[in-house]
Image (cartoon, rainbow over all chains, first blue to last red; front, side):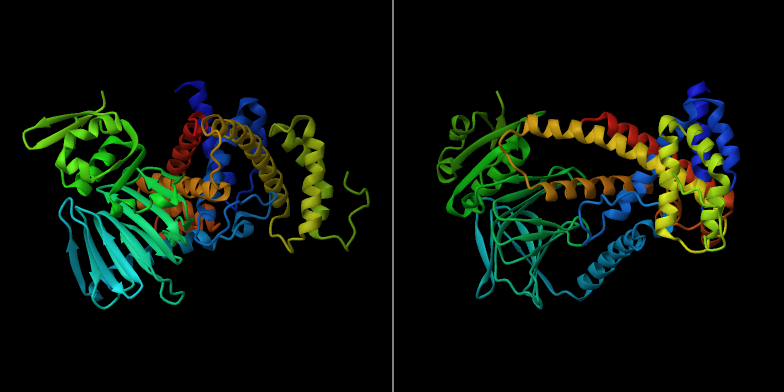
Length: 314
Length: 180
């Protein structure tokens, strides 16, 4: 064990001990600190890491304000920051899980699917409808017109707002609650994108609890990837219904999946290029007649391979 | 400087203990790396206890040491945070000219993501490690109480916490190094 490792291990032990409300050996701790000038810094690193993690967890609760910059408060940890928040969060996650199972049991679901290239509209009530893009699978509830589940693909939601009965969309483990809205949801396997053109959507009210405003698009790459909140022209949200599709630095695999779904053309991404990005706005109809026309529009190379069209970035 | 008034019966036990042990605290803060600020920090400890008036404290001397120790930890944290913040701020502005993401939503999202990362890091160390950490560090339960609650020995709780702390130090080192 190197000297540094030894100091680090000792610092960790001291942080462990001083962190307990019952710790009393402050003089022993002082002696250890005095033995080597490097001890204090090593101890700070451990103590601060544990405190940072605890605060982060405690602060990241639903309905809790974002910025947690209260003046340093020295009451013991018990009363320092609302401790119930973290356990409430854990509990609410559990409740969500339980509720989900319970609802799934009591739900009367039916599935609606579209073939690639096909568009279909489902009306849930006079002012609430869901437009499914091609290659999309969704489930609705016969007993609950305020619920929809996007299994895969893309759909545009035009939702009548009802304070008492918010409209809820689940996508995998994520959940969206409308705040009076037109919004577009897309999920390809593990990626997720939610774009809002009117009203607002509350994303995962029990966890991140993030409000997505008009002109904003929330994106996540991969199941546990980072979320990014970007801008999108409101007119661009759901434009696929009018036969247009726009990419803005979109990873090639996501763009390809969109194109295949919306046009019905069997586009696939060239090996090893899924993370390249493309930008451009194009009309869908001409691609059905001539799939290779995509090339100059997006600046990609399109190669016919049997019945498939392989898209690559030159 | 704390008032020089001698401890009187009207003072709380805590204040009396402070006045009796002021030098010990100063000594501790110096060992703790406070350097020239040690005197100021002793005074801050005094202000804390005279303002917050925590009521009867079972172990007043320990309470004072703990207060001083937490002051030092917070000082370390805020110094580090301002360095990280400064850097992130310039990063954001270098790569994002013209765009104006809603700051509070962004920051909130980043914090929620970081919290989720920490939670899953702790979970990956085993469900008990994560539970022990949360009960002890967030709910503030004493280590022996956590042990009793979970029906394990105190040394098991200690070793769980050791595992958690070690992973958190590494998490912190990673997130301090990596540009966000």
